[in-house]
Length: 407
Image (cartoon, rainbow, N blue to C red; front, top):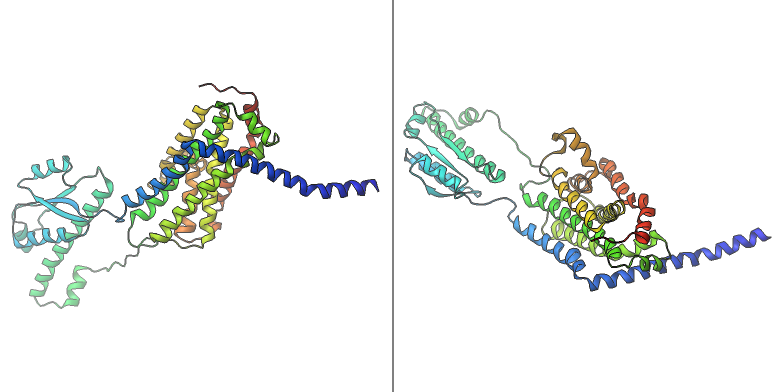
């Protein structure tokens, strides 16, 4: 009978325990909301700067790819054929002939001054050598300081010369009585059927902005997470914070970061709505995957900031480590250079960067529409990053109760 009464009492008290826990979380969250409102750094770091970054990068790459890159021509032949080739180069959307130079040295100095990104050099007798089948040499000079502009300029100049050579060959074959079918088979024996899967427009905005913007937002979350805990020590509010949570470090962290999570999560969802919905970036997935990725990204960034501060309970050191880790993530994320082509040590270290896992989940499940099973390792490691603060709860509690802030 006594055992049954104890079980009944425990059963009835359990809902009251949960209500008390929720009440403590809400009290800590209410306290945190007051801190967020009073300190303008939270407004700038959590709202204004991320929104500015979203519109800045998406507007910077608004055209998707560079248009009307300035280029030049050195035409020592000056015939109808070379002028037609120059006109064809100028007709491309990504190139614009802005100057004709008398010598190669003048054009080279224009590249070095940054006035043009490349130029074509037609030597004397180019047209006559083409008609006589003497294979004239037409030179391309382009700047590789900016790889996108340089590769685009090289592609356009090579295309122009291929079309010019085809036009001359077509005229000669037609003159000797060849049919159009025979001419096409001779000029292009193999027909290339090119398909750009996922991003048929070659839109740089569609894959650069979706990597850079979340990476910068994660940088802000890293820093503000470490800052919000460090200021509890700096302004001697840590004991009040723990007392309000009943001495429970888990409740203290949940209540403190709940308002920040809701703000950052809303910003991430707004970013996806703006890019995938309004701007029409390519995506092939259900909305719940986007919500899941936004959730893992935000809560993972907050957990990483908490973990770093728990290991190094110093405001300056923890924020320095967070900023360093976020910046390195841009290089090791794999968006601009494949990770498998890096040194094997760097490739192994890439698993420690949250931005790398974000990029893998995004490009496979959202951009290409593959199932989540293809990135299950990345999702598991995202969950591991979220659980990292549990390993250092006692250390963080000790720091809040015993450590003295050192400027």
